[in-house]
Length: 347
Image (cartoon, rainbow, N blue to C red; front, side, top):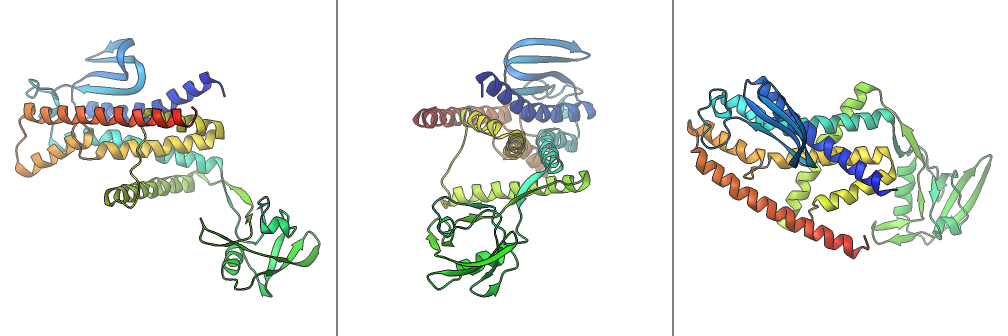
């Protein structure tokens, strides 16, 4: 894989994450009647741009970010007639939430495309061997891919789950198998071994895989289900980190770039799955009540709704500024750790 391909994949992935997020803010702000001064894809020096109406559109040098400048969100602009803070509370909440909503819609769409294209899954309805691990008990017993195990210790086996339970629960040293291979049926013995990682007895076989494709409606449902399942998994992992049951592991831009390169090597489905997962993470992270993030601003709006009046904008922006400095510092620290891991693994 050439470096040019990796760079193109990285830019494409970050674009799929950033553009929908910023478009979510932009579109809802426009629909709410807010004055949008600037819409930028990328950060840093402007490469190209133009102005249409009251909004300046630009593409900047670094494609790993973007922003929408809405009038009224900076000190001294609060009283702008079409500014952010002159809009109803529900409109402001919608505008701030729209970026994360867009990220979730992207994730659902990408997972739906994956389900329509087709996913490989294990065929478990029959106890048919897909692969035999090298030097495993199954290989030593001369089992082959395509063999069907019909009985274990005289008990009829209906599917892969029954076979796995029979192997796990075996009390004898050997398993007596009845095997069907093409037109032949024969008996053989296998000596299971205990897998310490899995915590059970195994013989070193895996089931075959099949390609399953879904129609668009079912794929959309499965895409939504997968998206919200992964959201729950992320919350579970964060909870485990907080209580100390799971090691705290965070990845910055360097680590994400490595993941993108690895996924690109594995194929389009793998890359789309990664983009969908990253989109969920971006959407969810931005909703956390952390100053400088959308969630931090939403928290101030929630408090405003409860107390019936807005905070002093200068004080609120100071909180966001401090939060931004802390956030950038954490990103730099995580990036530094990513670089050390990358160098330590030999690049």
